[in-house]
Structure formats: C-alpha cells, structure tokens
Amino acid sequence: MGLLAKFKAGLRKTHHKLVHEIQRIITRSPKLTGETLEELELALIGADLGMAMTTQIVQAVRHAYETQGGAGLDVFAIARREVEKTLATNRGELRKAAHITTVVSLVGVNGTGKTTTAAKLAHLVRQRGQTALLAACDTFRAAAIEQIKLWGHQLEVEVVAGAYGADAASVAHDAVTAALARKADYLFIDTAGRLHTKHNLMQELQKLHRVIGKQLPGAPHEVLLVLDGSTGMNALNQAREFNKAVPLSGLIVTKLDGTSKGGMVVAIQQEMGLPIKFIGLGEQPDDLQPFDAAQFAQALFEE
Image 1 (cartoon, rainbow, N blue to C red):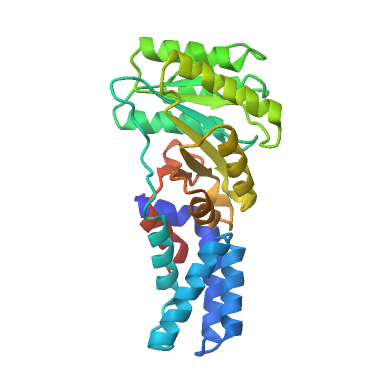
Image 2: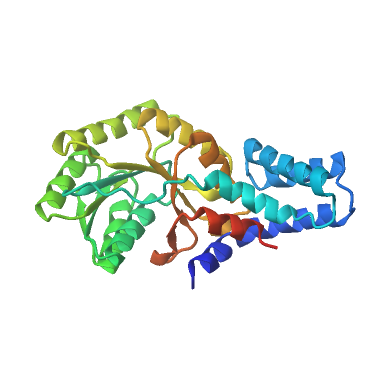
C-alpha cells in the first residue's frame, strides 16, 4: 500500500465525517450565506481542526466566493490548500546525532501507545539500514517490560531492561552505556506513562533526562510526545504541560485510524509550533508513517 493510500485508510473516519458534513452544507444552496459559513465553521471545529485553522479556512472560502462567485467554488480544494500551507513548515524528519548514538525519549500520558511506538520506530530505522536499541524505562506498568521485550523479539531489536520497580533513570543509564558500546545508531527510550498534572512524576522524567544528559552530552537528542489521536483537543493540554516540564522536539500522533478527530493534528501543530514527526495509522509495524503535510491534507479533504 502506498503512503497516500495509508493516509486515506487511516484517516477514513475523520475524512468521512468532514466530507459528508461539508457536502451537505454546500449542496443545499448555491449562495454562500452567513448561515452557511457558520455551519462550515461548526463542521471544521467538529473535526477538531481548532479555532485558528477553522477561521483561516472559512475566511479563505469567503474570499474566494466574494472574488469569483459561487460557480466553480471548491471548498475542499481551499481547505486542502490552507491545511497544507499551514503544515508545510513541518520539520518532520527524525534527528540524527553526528558520529554517535541518537537518543530518543518517548513521553506521554498512560495509554497513548508509547511502547508500541518505540518498537515501531526501531523497526523503521532498521528498515533504513540503521541499528537500534530499545530501553524499557517503564518500570511501573504491569506487563510493560514483557510487552517491549516481545516487540524486541519479533523485530529482532535488543532490549535493555531492569526489574519491575527499578529506578527508571538507572535503566536509562544502562541503556545509554549499552548503545554506546554497540555503536547503535539509535536508542529509543520507552518512559512510563504519567499524567501531565502530576508534578512529582514530571520531576522523575526530568531526572531521567538529566542522567542521560550527564552520560551523553546533548542527549536526549529528541523528546517526542506521543498523543492519542482519539482524545481530540484534550491532547493540546497534554502537549502544553509536557513541553513546560521537558522541552519537546516533536510529536507523534497515534490511533488516528480509529477516530473522527484527526483534525487535532493541525490544531496542535499550529498552536505549539512543534513538528509532527510521525502518525500512527494502524496496528502493524509499518503503520507508523513519517508525517507528510500534502498527503495528510489530501487524505482529509479529498472528495
């Protein structure tokens, strides 16, 4: 399956809801009234595109109608163009440290798919001919260590793990030591899920990053917040709070295949100014895809 086809399949629920609503609004009358624009605004907000993006699209549609009239007005093409234009500055590639292991820390609340995402990232870099290690630094959640070890076994990626209840920073320290000894290209650190409102848990995460940074100056080179796409705009609060505690370098949005709130990707990127690095469009190792603004916009708004 090609990349665009994967985007379309993954965003099917969001696309279906959006397109159905927009078609219903614009086919009812050839005239674009204030009421029509208000309905269009509600449809876009309903897909969690956020207020700024919604306003931008509605203003562009109004401008097009005022300058060229209703004939040939393509709301979908306008929306697609505005979303793509906004996301085009997205710097989505995974960083690579020069001549040394690149350490990537995956953070987020419980249940967003951090463990699975860490494994999928390791798989992705291996597909590119690079080497990877996984660090099981979620030492609290039941079965978290078994889960990442199972992924490691399936994908033939070595996992550095400690015992349950072990100090996560200590496991991270051992993982960095192992990655440097093996000259691995990447080390992906699966951290414990933590509520963004819990100050003590955020301090633990800061400690883990400090330990890594002392051992390998400049690390972690990436701090990626993993967000569950089905939470919609609630994910924005998570992004704000995590970014205060551990400055983020990018976002990964998972579970977009099961939600009609896929527009939240646009809203978060627009407000936070953080690049969307990858989006999760399914369960398989290959279903974590590098974010592509043009194909994302097309998958959302293609009639």
